[in-house]
Image (tube, rainbow, N blue to C red; front, side, top):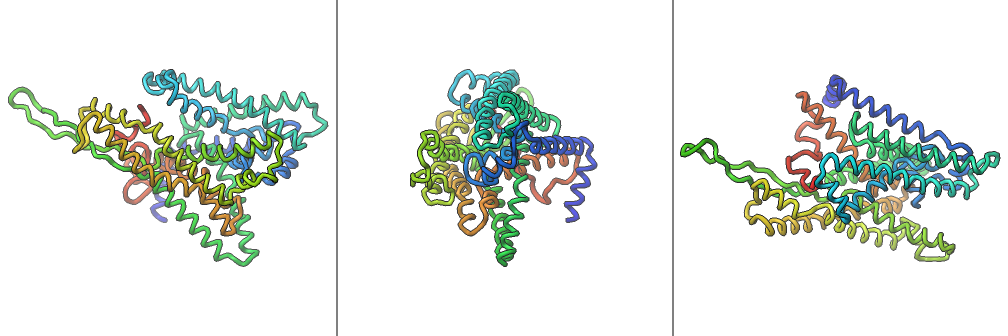
Amino acid sequence: MKRFIDTLKNIWKIKELRDRILFTLGLLWVFRLGSFIVLPGADPAVLQAQMGGGGDNSLLGLINVFSGGAFGNASIFALGIMPYITASIIIQLLGFAVPYFQRLQQKEGESGRKKLNQITRLLTLAITLVQGGAYLTYVKSLGAVDQSVPESVFWLSGIIILSTGTIFAMWLGERITDRGIGNGVSLLITVGIIATLPTAFAFELQGRLQSGGFLVFVLEIAALFLVCMATVLIVTGVRKIPVQFAKRMVGRGTGSIPVAGARDYIPLKVNAAGVMPIIFAQALMFLPGLAAQTAGADAETSWFVQKLNDFTSGPYNVIYFVLVVAFTYVYTALIVNPSNYADYLKRQNAFIPGVKPGKPTEEFIDSVTTRITLPGSVFLGLIAIMPAFAAAFGINNLFAAFFGGTSLLILVGVVLDTLQQIESHLLMRRYDGLVKEGRVSGRSSSRMQGIGANM
């Protein structure tokens, strides 16, 4: 505890780091404050009653969790940062298939990134207009609109305010990234997720105390801690492929001396796909229910749709697990390009010991990636269905969501990245890091860490 307090004092001593943290906290507070400012003409009480608190496993419940309850509050940040996330995913996928976006991502450097950012912002605005209209239609269909407000005023003001709210949230995220600490957009999502944790924790504790099961609650907290630790291990886990750089000659003429080349490694992440497979799989799981509602079918009479709407059912979890494993392989194949690694090593006059340069190196890296993706995909699938196991043991659905799924992976990933940035500031000024031995694993542990991401 004394070491932790000393670390906090060291953080406060560094003016730049202190200013960055305070700046980040201030903008996060602004974002949370906007989550409680209601749209003109909307009635959040009716909306929350119709949504059942927003804690279900539906698509709308998931959006409500990511927005920190702003969706259910009918606030100006009801759409949150999700349109920007959607636009970023679309641009990233286009970068795998469309040559123009590939060129912007890989070859045009800073100018290409600026163009991509501009395209992403414009696409975010377009998505916000579409989603904003759908959200206002949803609010009106639930009767959560004040009848004294003219319909034209509600629609016009609602579209403008929702679009402005999303653009402002995107601006907040970019300012945090530039002048604060951590990734701004990720922190906005994380704050939204954490905002629901105290309520879920209180409900679970109250329920256990009423049933006399305080010891069970302690065991639940211990299980949650173990799941978080296992998630940290898989998120930070890498398979290090050793790399040997060729010898170089020091001196001139006959007096030159051969010096052994440096050693390095290629860190292939066990979970290179991150949270994306769960997002894609979850989106597919929602499609049958949405299709049934669009077709006007009665979802209650359809056994298949009913099971897919219940995250505790066996069919749901089996299909969900298989989809997560499959998407992990697909997304890893898209973002990890062995030929890029092989070309980079060739340009740097480096090689993997025991492996010939060129095609054999590419095949070796591909085989290693395939092997380590298997345990990574299986673990990701288990994390995805972990809330169902938590609910099966009597944990309320809102608290069970923190035992796995998208929420847990986002929380772990964002916290690790933020801590790594804080530790970098401490180590640059000769202070001890956040851990006694070793370092917080981040994205810059090796000079070759970013080869796959930057190519």
